[in-house]
Length: 358
Image 1: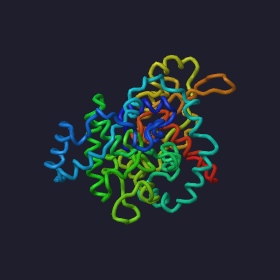
Image 2: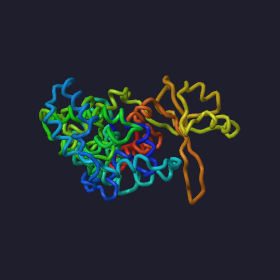
Image 3: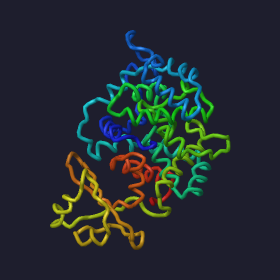
Image 4: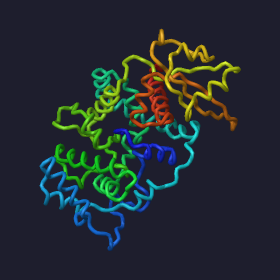
């Protein structure tokens, strides 16, 4: 997120059938205390790290000696590099990807989380216009409501990726810079924060840059706390979506149907299961219909989403009209499967609490 993650992270999430931001540390990680070769120089002794420290001192007024002590404690994490270099497989199909996220235990946990934090969720919805169930859906998919928020030291993760993962070094150096600034703003030791092996933090898994940009202090404590404050967590997720143009009261997905004689031509317009957005009249002219057009006139460009289904081992496809709010969900994680899982979990939790779908 968080916090949108880089494309590589999104692709890796398909590999493990869960967002990488909420993945547990690989075996042997031991929360940032992975083995480090005796021949591998301490980060504070490396020229590239010393140059980075110099940049932070010159640009943001950090004390060089203090930062050097921080990087002396940073530990290289070979398991992170191995995970990032893991061969990318074909993304899973919807019916495989969605199974853990829509499981009864996750829905029940979502009901419990909503009930326990109803005030915070209602306040966030009132302020930002994002439905409470959508916030619940995101944190349910991201970290199982905080149960699986990552056990790596963020300092270790980001330092490893910034200086020992050349493919994405520029991105992660930027996030490391943001993390050091964030640590100073929050008044915490950089060594203390825990997160995913990509450096995402807290219950909603914000990357440091997103934390500094979108996290809000909803409980008035003086700083946003995405690990422990339900008000800050709900407000920050809602603020992130609102800042990415969530439209209050508008739908996310609606069922669609395709005329049999038009299906092949329509499917050629889908790239990876999701089309570009077009006027609804253009889709209708091509043979697409909205199965339940209960939202009134559709005056925004919409996309067409394909989902792979399976019933008793027989595969089929279903279709949805994707509104602007669906694309906003993909700003959190650029995956049609992720965004659909968030929406479907949100609806399942809402219904389980006695509400009607929306």
